[in-house]
Picture 1 (cartoon, rainbow, N blue to C red):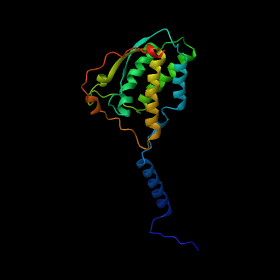
Picture 2: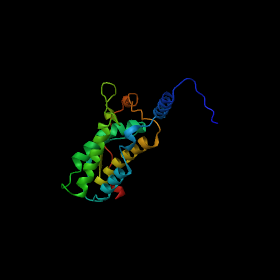
Picture 3: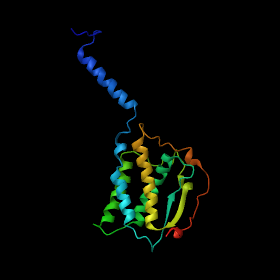
Picture 4: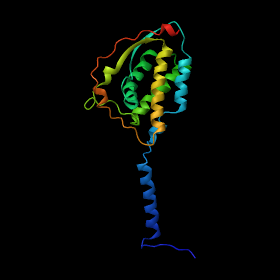
Length: 192
């Protein structure tokens, strides 16, 4: 004999209530949704391949990227992504159909996808100061520049895959740093 407690609810309503409770728990646990899958280990492998395909000596490029300084991980990533997109599109042009061309297309597509899925909001200059004060001009080898790109993308991957809740991308307070932007970093000739 099975004991059941019936408080006057039809079985269908009980099942619906269970589904609603289950869905509510899933939402309150904060699944970051599609952003968890917006970057994969394959993307990180792509940037690693692109780094490995660069000449180790010879040319030097000058570019601007965001320096971390006192920025939290999420505000650093948010500020750095537009500069990374600019770096990839202006300094890393390859013959169409080549592996490197495919890698750059994959990485720029990744960043556009991150924006289109609203995984990282673009900087809202009505609410946030432009984090240009965290920008720094670098002169280094292409592989070192791509290493910096890899660092930022790795931090983004860590943010969206290791948290149980969505990332808070509000950076109003952090971007109000009024320090003058740094303009130059010594070249990395000592490492070569």
